[in-house]
Length: 84
Image (cartoon, rainbow, N blue to C red; front, side, top):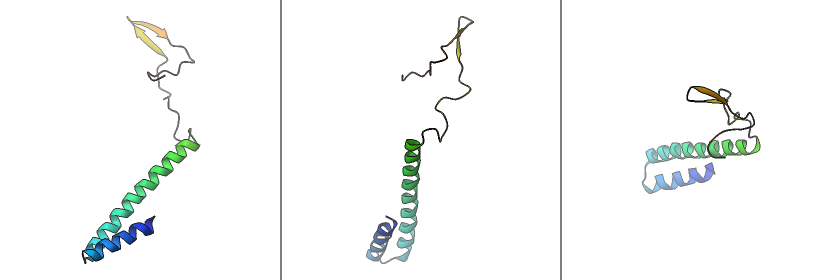
């Protein structure tokens, strides 16, 4: 994919007859393709090893709530969250 990006950098710079444009577009393509690669690697890692980035639930999550100053314990099997 990087070779294809360089090809278009060369074509674009030849059209405008400027080596500066080649350098700028090459660096821009390198940054863009690197960002895409890092994103794909991150999503693939998350899909194949879900626990690699740690648990969704933080260890500091409170297992109780307070209503009118009284502590009410939550069900230990309840993961919590509003989207369940």
